[in-house]
Length: 76
Image (cartoon, rainbow, N blue to C red; front, side, top):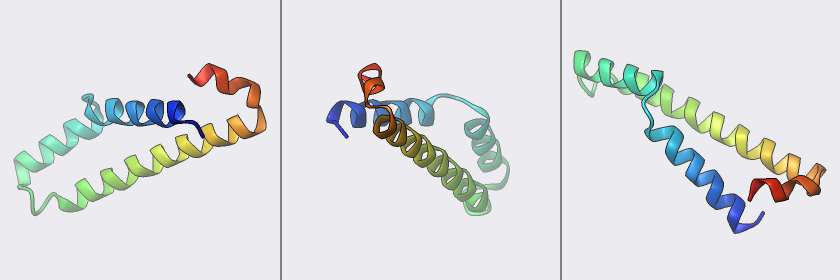
């Protein structure tokens, strides 16, 4: 895997994590209503789900570049 693909993946991960979406809005709402200690289960679940989605995206991209090396040029 080239450094360009890794950089693109981390850029996607950062943008996905920082943009407002349902998870970020739910996290803000839960913490503001219940406090940080009582919201840790929800926040942990969101983090685990986000990590799972990012790992699946990475695995899919890696498998695509290994199965079809010609498409790796499109990722850069």
